[in-house]
Amino acid sequence: MGEPFIGSAALTAGSLTRHILRTRFVALHHDVYIDKDAEITAVVRAKAAWLRSRGHGVLAGFSASALHGARWIDANRPAEIIDTNRRRTAGILVRADVVDDDEVCIVDGMRATTPARTAVDIARRYPLDTAVAAIDALARATRLKVPDIELALRRHRGRRLDKARAAIELVDPGAESPRETWLRLLVIRAGYPPPETQIPIYNEYGALIGVVDMGWRDRTIALEYEGKHHRMSRDAFAKDIRRIEAMIEQGWIVIRVTAADSKATILRRLATAWARCATA
Image 1 (tube, rainbow, N blue to C red):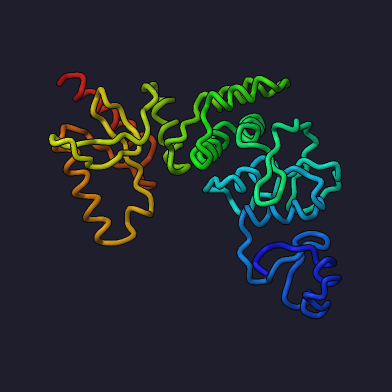
Image 2 (tube, rainbow, N blue to C red; image 1 turned 30 degrees about the vertical axis):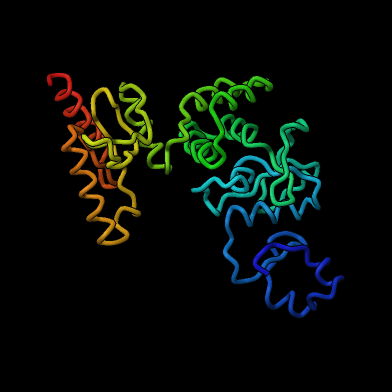
């Protein structure tokens, strides 16, 4: 059983014996078990929290985001659920929020906050950079639009709304990873106009050369964050080099950023490129 399940229900159904339950499975919560060798992901934690609530709770925050298909969620994060059972339990954050019926949807048979409500909750509860990266991923997974999140926010009151608005204003579903979000926020905070994400670049014949992570069309400056996926194979690496060379031939300045680059180095390279375009 790779999915969490209620142990007592399995025993009653006769699908397991007590010996098998004790030796082959581990308890994630009281009476909620999973195979000892199963990978514990954010989705698994969400499902286990739902089972613990016996179907009375509403999965929220990062747990709801994981169910909606958002990537990059730390598997070690506690599950989040809105529930009347407030007893403290390791691995679960129980929220006392009020949630309206139209802010709840069914995902894989479980109740969870809608993508818009999920974004609002993350925006008002977590540090700004964490929230923006998480909502970027959620919006990308669900095709959620920023105006939809802003509309959902208007329904709420509280002291954290200004914080939530600040995060939502920075959301861009074009970010394909938290590091791309980090890079975009870095250049915005340095005073540059917000870059456009996922810019298609064409050659002189109108054929698509490739899509860059972010940049400014009017300056023909592109920023590319080079994650591990860029080094997966020799063929992919060679293809990526040819793609960048073709973009440069079309007059683009392509700044490639890696985890080894400091903030100062990135901004210095961008400043040099910006100055070149200003004098061109």
